Length: 253
Image 1 (spheres, rainbow, N blue to C red):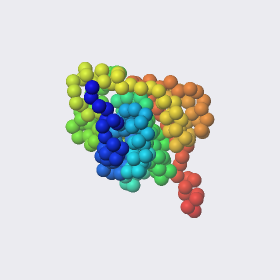
Image 2 (cartoon, rainbow, N blue to C red; image 1 turned 135 degrees about the vertical axis):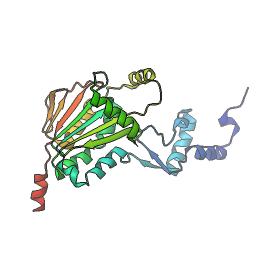
Image 3 (cartoon, rainbow, N blue to C red; image 1 turned 120 degrees about the vertical axis):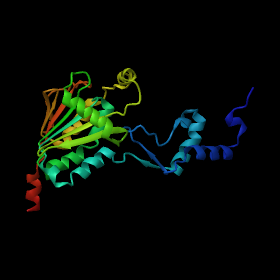
């Protein structure tokens, strides 16, 4: 009968093995649920109670904890906000493939950057929409093809924006790794509608004003009016921010 790991190796050797497995090269355990990358595997701690007890102190002895680094999407919107022409934008439309919890959480990380657009510019309407199953026009298909061909990668997703004088459209999507039938199956498997209400409340608290879900007013001035019922496949979130540049200008003057 083969001997167990705990019975063969003394504690000193086990500690060296634990350190080799758990010590991150960046010396940080980063919790980033919106990306596909895993900074550190903690499966070793789930092996048994004794190994968990021996590992838990070694893990934090060699690593710090980074709760949430800024997403690339947040940094993109923050950088866009520095350009003068963006301050003329009044309407922003963001097109996504799904509005489930993971995708909405990813989008919510950028909301503080967009709130700065409202304070410093003229942004008065933000629409976040998913159009998975509804028919699409020729222009929408052209935008999708352009995204696939020219979109840049942000947080494991494709991103492309275009703007006129007062309107900007942001298209996002997933890279295409497989046949469309497999992608459809994958979307069904990954679809997670739980936790959306809390994210919508968090988004509303960033902007104030009014927040509509599929045409229904759900939040107004930090008060919930109706319970949201968002369709993750073909839903729409419309934000009419209560933020403006006037209070900021008054403070400066």
